[in-house]
Image 1 (cartoon, rainbow, N blue to C red):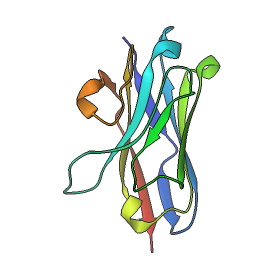
Image 2 (image 1 turned 135 degrees about the vertical axis):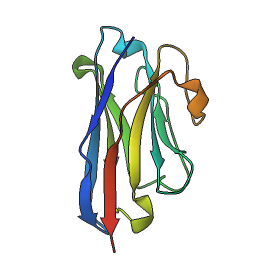
Image 3 (image 1 turned 180 degrees about the vertical axis):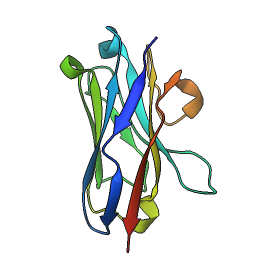
Length: 124
């Protein structure tokens, strides 16, 4: 089992950047597929980005493609989400998620473990 803890959220102006981190406990993190999802107030949780165990394979939602970058450092048991050119519509609670094997992709049901979330607020 792995525990996930997100950090790095905050309040920024439109056009700014933030980097979210998701620290994982456990010795098998390097085999985990990881993902980032977000949920805005009153809306359903939506996929943001995913990364495979090695970091070679990544996927992004169309709404963040070209602005956000997902990466991981298996030596530090951490996955990151670099968010550039932030927009007010990026405002949401951001969650990281993990699954022990295979590929998670954009389907939240494919992930077994979730963090508690970190708030990102982008003002116009």
